[in-house]
Image (cartoon, chains in turn blue, green):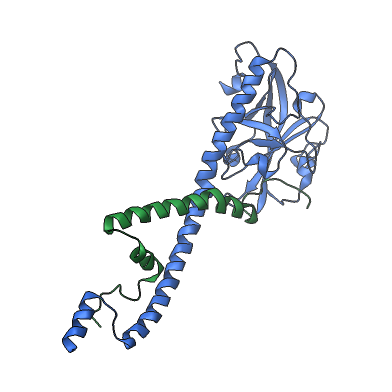
Length: 245
Length: 65
């Protein structure tokens, strides 16, 4: 009999009741430990998702939408592009921040910005589009991390750096003149037609880039202001202005 | 006690799953891998996109709310 029990233990068949009791506690602890490990893995995966996968998805979407804009520019005649359409209105080139072109679309909801584009404000302060020719503030927002992270390197922008907005017919060349590295997310004054905090007092053609700061958080907002320096006509080869060459 | 295989009775939920998978170790490993891929897919496709707006990491705009 004793020999049989030993045999059973060796082969891993059910042990005595006493042992099963300790086994239950041990099993509970095991499951708890495994849940903790699982939670850790899921959180790790969430970081991978946020900082990598959303970029993959967003860049793909932005490329598609950008191609569509370029196609529509190529097809249409000399009529100005219909603004306010769902399609992008142009591309932002900021060599000091990123090598690629950033598609600009209408609106700053996460649904729009998550496609890896920059959005111009419609709320709480309506942006003035440079194509309108009116004086005002062309205010834009884009993600700092994840979803294309188009404004990730906004802190690399310095006074005098060019921000070029490309539309079908024009290159709008802005120069950075001021930045606010940290401000409240409720500070809507930065979007004003004359952004006083940037030091300007008179109406003019301004551009405002907003994103979140510090990186990987949304605690504050990072603001960069630029002012229109000149407008260049797009030639038949779409030769970029000298700032982009 | 020392004669009892270490995994017996305290191998947690993953051990439980492993024991209930059919086939030999290779088949079990293959099915496990498929399960892991399925879980990661569900997380990336459905769970994380749902959870993300609930977490305060992606707000980039200024507003007065």
